[in-house]
Amino acid sequence: MMNIAAIHLRHIEMPLKKPFDTHAGQVIDRELIIVEAVDVEGRRGFGEVTAFSTPFYTAETIHTAWELLSKVFIPTVEWQKIAHPSNISVKLAGYQGNEMAKAGLEAALWDLFAKQKMQSLSELIGGTRTHVDTGVVLSLSDDIGKMIEGYQTEGYRRYKLKVEKYKEAQAIQEVREYSQELPIMIDVNGMYEEKDIPYLEELDSHDLMMIEQPFRAGDFFLHQQLQNTLNTPICLDESIRSLADAEQAIRMESCQIINIKISRVGGMTEALAIHDFTRKSDTPVWCGGMVESGISRAHNIALASLEGFSIPGDISASFRFWERDLIIPEVNVKKGKVEVPTEPGIGFEIDDEYLQYVTKVSRTFQVN
Ligand code: OSB
Ligand code: MG
Image (cartoon, rainbow, N blue to C red; front, side, top):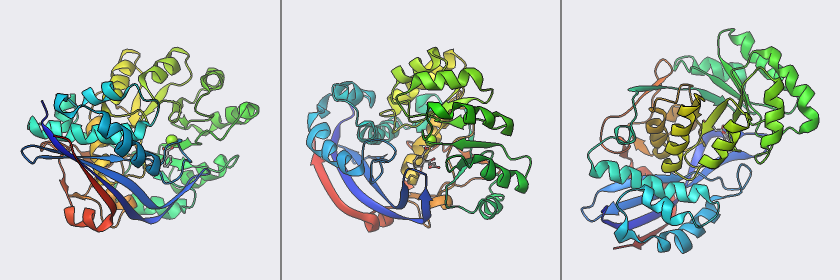
């Protein structure tokens, strides 16, 4: 048994160095929920709910997550019976959706469980990499040339561009002018429709690594139609909420690559199942980002240390978003790589002083 004694929820707000813009929404001050699970011996595991303040990316928000965690999920789990982090996803499977709330709770248990076993999270889940390759995202409001200039020292292995509708060519051109060699992909966050298929087919000429999420999340058919005529691989993000979605996407050939986000699929257990499934069909995967704090960044690093994560993910340095992060040391990128920690659990210390400073509301649930 994991002998969990208490769950703490903290609603925090961290100022971003500069706004992060997509066509659908903007993030200025990042609200998050930090979940802490404490066992009877006082060991602490940390997770994070990465839903946004408004439902621009998925339907969940940080406020719906707070409500469900405190009123439904935490009271429902039979905490004395939890022997492994995956036990709670079984228990919560009867509740629809709300993947990010579930994922944040499970994450705290994964960190705690690894600490109880005196293993790093990467080792616990079967990670094989000592370093993971990383990329960085340029949001709509970023000055492409200036940002890339700044990122040169970290040596990111892939640049992902957020784009304005029908203006991809311009943005890609700006990066190419800076350097011919940088691998580029675009993330269009589902802003296109069936009538745009001829336009999207023209994007083949730009030699992109991939195009992320051309159409709305539920549409496996249109993605299949486009992938059928496009040489550029399609990568699905918003469409993949579960293992079943990943199976459907691969069987229908709706994409050639999958972006796995722990939060979007309801937790590490589901992320591992998707990884294992994609191994069987040789579908490459990469780890997506949520403009998150170092706590979920650390979970992402462990996930990305698995064999199937053969493409650089959105795991940028703490410095990309934050003046100060919640973890010590902060995440550093050198030559486009992040080192996978070997210390127990997520492998980073929590900056308790800063955590307390950014906390707006906190609540404790005694569960044992
Ligand atoms: O589509 O991956 C996305 C940020 C906000 C909403 C959606 C997305 C993103 C990112 C963030 O791309 C990437 C990161 O955290 O590095
Ligand atoms: Mg995306």
